Length: 404
Image 1 (cartoon, helix red, strand yellow):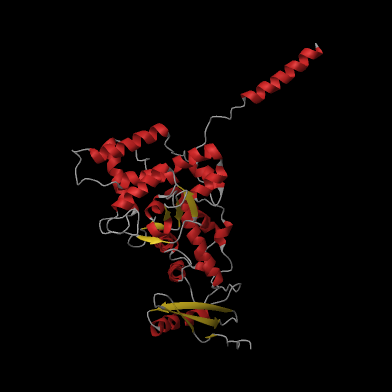
Image 2 (cartoon, one colour):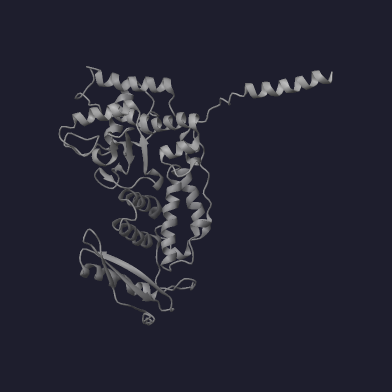
């Protein structure tokens, strides 16, 4: 039987969903005074709290004009600030339902609060024009070139939500083309540079005059694992003995199922690779197998993680970056020496030997274009075609000799 049609300016019964963390989500259909329909949600620690939140927003929503009904005077003026805060609640709900990772939601919220709301907060959503979005985006490119693309992506998510809820006719952000980023020179240390870098790590660890406690093998082992596998540092730190490391197979290997994340809370393992292509299996060279066997023997506390602290908790990315900063200062190395640079070294060497497509699989990229643009340093050495052109020359010369 079809649902009963709502009267204009009213809403229907609330439907309830209980999340894994026990929070209550209520959803309500409503019909605006102009006859158009939509739905909205609210959540709380109890049904009564969620009900209060939902009843607090429904009168405003039913009084608003629907999509395609722009009026000179609106019953309710919705600012970008209010829309963004409502979208943040919606984004958190997606996280709690497992649709996005906590670190992704944290980054979305950081960009919305710190970059977008200060710029667009007091503007009425339905009066923001394509030109204003374009100007805002270009300003972000000038001020935060590294974050502008992500900020534009979050703005597009917010405006898509606004269109779905009927606050605007369409997402105008999609009509603003992204500016091409200036291509940076890929820093992928070569063999000689890697030799100097690894020696610097060893020298720092063994220096008796170095301040502070004696460092453990964390940094050197992480460096060697990245060079053995091409993993991201978070993926290296996320390796677990029982689930990701297989040493008793004829050809030992690791499986990448997730990574250690730190944004948006304490360091933790998340089953969210950067993309589906990040779920991969990688065969291990002999030195990496020896490294893992040594760490397995040293794991007297029985930690789940290959790389762990004295309390058996996983090491975090900041632990590695902190140790690496000390090595750079000790050896007077440039700041370019970071874990991701080592990953690019692997990408460059592998791409040169077996091509871009297999390298993209190894690095966990969905497209080889990403591998070529950001990871594999282009060589200026052309293929050796001496035999080919020599054969062409001999064919031409032979023909000329016969004709003479």
